[in-house]
Length: 186
Image (cartoon, rainbow, N blue to C red; front, side, top):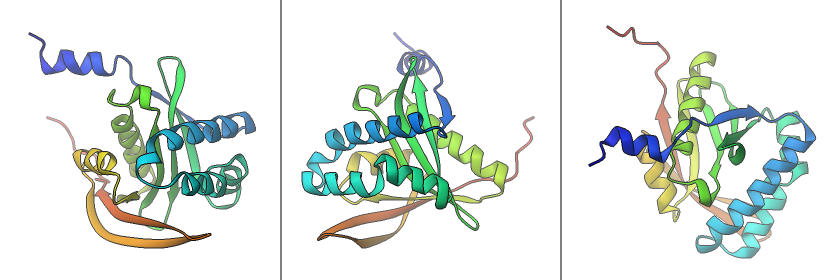
């Protein structure tokens, strides 16, 4: 019989590597991953028209480049098993970090890569003195809500945001505190 440690090793054989996106080729790769992941994942949550609209508005090469260059966002590729398996988009704010994007390709879900991404983001916060991570998640995205709750996020409010052309984002805002002081281990 396998122990939980052995099961964990099988689930995620190697820790993923997080590569900060800077070059145009990396931005293109994020946009391609976004199109693939969103088209697969959101089809049961929002319309195909809204997926296409949101990809163009928020996750096209041009939109991602503008977010990085002008809006203070940082994007990271999640690389595991020698291939990009997902991506993260974050934006530091006054006293917290906005986790704008955390997506893992369907073929790589359940391997612990999203959890490792949240741990990386929490460490990023600690080194910059940011005391919380905040995100928004579609209220009908039960799989993501459950995953965030398992990693310590709590719902703090709901919001409906008009994003144009008749589309809205109907979301739950979730937050996770980040301990800023490192606890000494005994």
